[in-house]
Image (cartoon, rainbow, N blue to C red; front, side, top):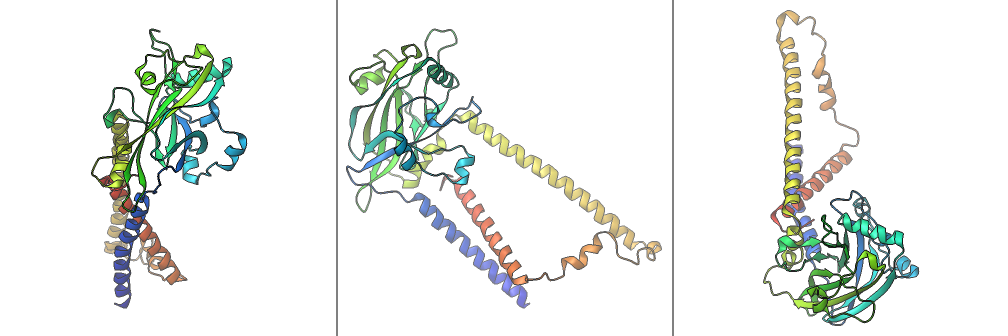
Length: 360
C-alpha cells in the first residue's frame, strides 16, 4: 500500500507541475521585446526556399547587396540543431529600421551582374524562390499589390516575377522593398513590434531614388535580366496596430493563417494518413499478440497436456523478469517519472498550439 501511495503522490505532483512549467514556457514565448523611439533594429536574412525547388539556398548564394566579410563574421547568428536541420542560416543584412522613423527611400547598393550570375538569378525567379527576413524575430510576410486579406499573405518575398508562358511579359527582378512595421504601445512604455510586412516591386532606376508610390504603382519601367545592372532600394513605414486582441494572437496568428489553403489541406491529409496507418499497424500487432497468448492459454488449460507443460514455456517465461525488482530502482523510477513529465508537457504544448494559444 505504501508503494501505491507514493505512486499516487508522484502522479499528482507530475499532473500539477507539468501545466505550470508549460504555462511558463508559453509566457516566455509570448513576451515581447520593448524598444524605445529611435532605436535601430537590424533586419536579418534567412535562406531562399521554394515550393517548386527541392533545395534551400543561402540568401547570398545569388549576387545581391551583402555586408563586408568582417560584419558577416561578427554578426552571424549561430543556429541550433533544429534550425540547421530545417535549413535556416540567419545572417546579417544591409537593411535596418529605426523605431517610429519612416524612410521614404534609401539606396542599398548597386550590383553589376555577369551573364552567369544573372542566369542563376533568373533561374531562381522562374522556380519561384522566396527570400526570408526577420525583424525582432518576426518573419517577413509579403503582401502582394491589391491584396489586403491574410489569405494572400506569403512568408518571405519572391525574388521576382517569372515571365509568362506565352512570353507576353518578361521576367522582372524585385529590387525595391517597401517594409511596413506594425507596433503597439507597451504598458511599461516603449513599443512592441507585432508585424513585419513587405510590398516588393521592380524599378529600373540607376540614378536617384524613386518615389515609393510611383514604384509600387508600376509606372516606372521594371528591372529585367536584360539590364544586367540593378540598383536596390528600400523604404519603411510604421503603423500602429489598432486590433484590440492579445499580443500572442497579434504577433503570431497571422503567420499561422498565411499561405495557400491547398498546402494546409495537404498537411492535414498527410497527418490523417499517418494516423490511419499507425492505427492499422497497431490493430495488426494486437491481433497477433492476442492469438499467441490465447493459444498458450488453451494449451495450458488442456488437462491432457498437463504433463508436457510441467515446465513453463512461451510468454510465461517472462513472468519472473517482469516482476523482478531492477537494480537502482529509485534512479530508474526517477528517470521514468521525468520522462512522463516531459511527454505530458509536450502534449500540453501541442494542444495549446492546436487551440491557437501558441504557434510553434
